[in-house]
Length: 351
Image 1: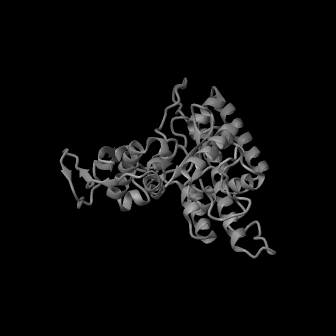
Image 2 (image 1 turned 120 degrees about the vertical axis):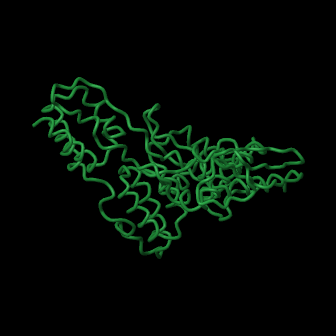
Image 3 (image 1 turned 135 degrees about the vertical axis):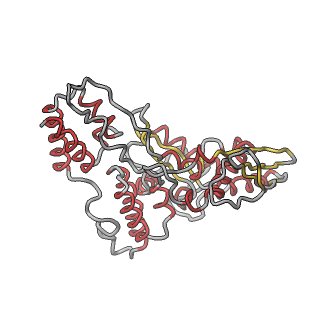
């Protein structure tokens, strides 16, 4: 078994390696894997890289963190592209023999009729891909509605807006390849499949006692403001240079991404800038993004204090639960702008 990394040196992953080296951990942290990751997630990621022979330091595979409301923490999931799946499948066939092929991709319209080419400007209802390994068929169907990536208003975004038929077919292909190569592809998902994981959460109404003539500020509070509709971090990893990452960062900030998510994007850009700069001249701290990567601690504390005071004046019950439901995330994860917007909505009720 050969080493995974094509480049030598301290970043090469050895087949007998049981833990990440300090040099490898430093680069992983720059790529967006922060201190919220658990030891078990890092160990599982190392094992997956060894098993799939995908190199995280060549941006072939990533460990992406997303907030999980049930676990009350950021959960990290291995992620690659559909091209990564294809590389693994063809490598397995080359090493162990056999044959790999595909049947024609089919798309389904809303009436249930299948087509071998999709010409409509409207998105297909589903796509079907059949992978054939050693003569055995592995069919898979992906529904557009289950995988489409959306903005806050529910409209498709990015490649899902430009090429919905292609994106749906990629998801179906990933499902089929995973069935055909269950051992080799277990535990890693494609970016096309995971795009919907960043879709806005459904609006929730916080129930509480409302006094006569009083509006419910929690019901009209700002919606979820974590990175909506696009996998900005994945786009940053795929960006050509630091300038492209800077633009991705700004778009994520405009879309209401939380500071921790913006910091991960900024870390990717800074790593690119540092790699492109001469060894003796490290890139300045503000090379990639503006200085507002994270809100100052004093500004955040003042915003929280104002919110708490407004809630007390409005006699709102259960401050912690109410703010979390209104913001769509824990108060500690919310950006200052969202906190101040919620404060402005509560104050009229207190007046």
